[in-house]
Image (tube, rainbow, N blue to C red; front, side, top):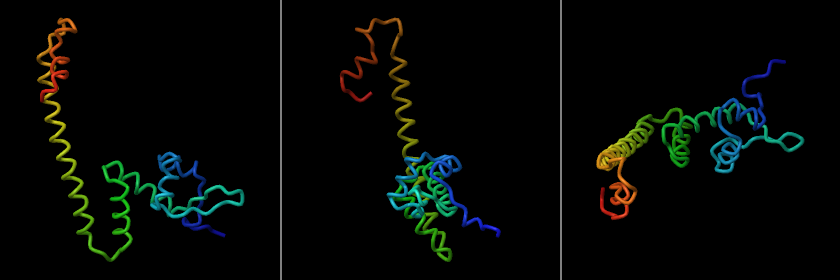
Length: 142
């Protein structure tokens, strides 16, 4: 008898290795309701099917580009309606891109502030004359 792809089951260790997601995170995704409830072996071990593997890979990819678990849940719900419009998914991705751009702007500002602070420091100064420590201790905007 030829087993279909959907009939393949994995232990948590196997699915963790295949997906590159640690078992603790997989358990958390299960508890959070993001992945299909695994069946249990006779000895009580979780046995994940291929659908769960696909869900875990989706979660991992989504996390890597900055989506929160709540946002991932929304994306999964939108993705479950195959005849739905992609516009809402695009809107969520655009929102995430906008957030990333804001963070990049903040990081560029931080980079400039740190560079300015480092530029004021002569590494031959004594700690008591360190302009970096003085600026941090003053509480002034650097």
